[in-house]
Image (cartoon, rainbow over all chains, first blue to last red; front, side, top):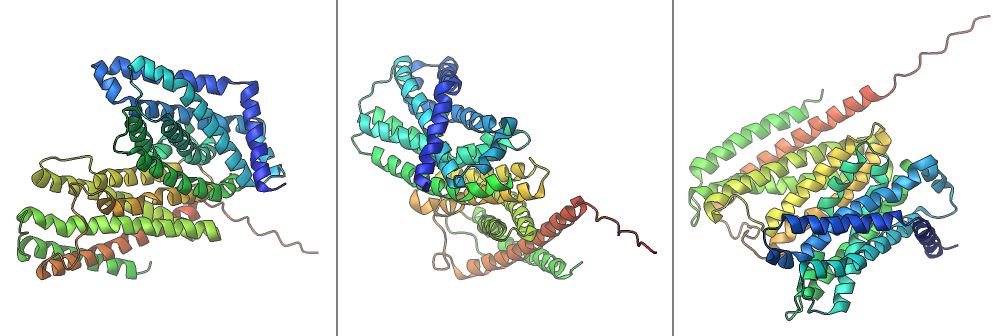
Length: 225
Length: 226
């Protein structure tokens, strides 16, 4: 079985676990929704909500993603399942990419569910190209999942995991957060200067770096863990 | 106890005093900024060595991942801590420069922002090192996190070229007058000697700590006599 096939088997297993008990997706959805509502309650005027919509959406997803990465590995740590993972007849890199793709898919599902609600709640007029918005959403979720999946494995074995994961992840994903927020905003407002593609390029570059580096080192972290 | 690192430290301190004296009293005032421009002799060497020390941490991280030798992990630990101190100093000096020249202590300029992100990523590595008792896990996690954090170092360096904004671009000997270049190089040498001293001392502390944490060797087996 080659690595690509193994990756899809791990992805299938992750999504099957989620399908049988969708507590994580629903939990993340309500977490992100609560964030959108909290920001609305804390904002002095409704106009600010419209101008900050892209940033609020991605901050909500970022915070939700830390819960997601945490849970992704905490289930593996129960009853020594992570040790069993080392005995699987699959390459560690396939485990990483399978889990990271599953985390991307879960975050994307939350994004698809939360975006229309944000548009309605914040009264955001969507004027731009929806295919560009979809590309930014896919790349943005992938950018959160790539380092998050690796750091999730590390912090699941560490003391103070719940504090450590955001501390490690937040500064690392600043370029992705910036690109996804600004890209979402320019596409929402209409994009006469075609800036969406440059923010998308930054997201693609971020993903290229972090998906390759994290995949490279995952096996070492898993074996030494 | 090797004397070379203390000699480097002593020479570094003397050079630093000489460099600061030259920068404050001998070098001409900067044409546009006046005496405020004298911060250049401290701020720029600190900025250069903050990034260079993170490069040393990166080398230590790669060294550990390739060889699994603890000496490389101690280098990683030493360089990250010294680099974080330099990065904090860099941001403080930048703020002191920013107030009289830009009118604000802080602005969300790409260079300032990327330097802050660089600091936070490496602070995260220090915190990660404290999250486990196992030396092997600590070394592996720290090495991996350092490589990921290091992505921010070239971004910080290139930020003034990629996003032209309020922060000036890197100076070169062609853009700075000759006496200023001389004073700058004296301060650069001082910083190089001091960084060598700091990293060497911190490496030795890491080594002694690791030896103290290591389990004591078993007593020799009793001799059986017939």
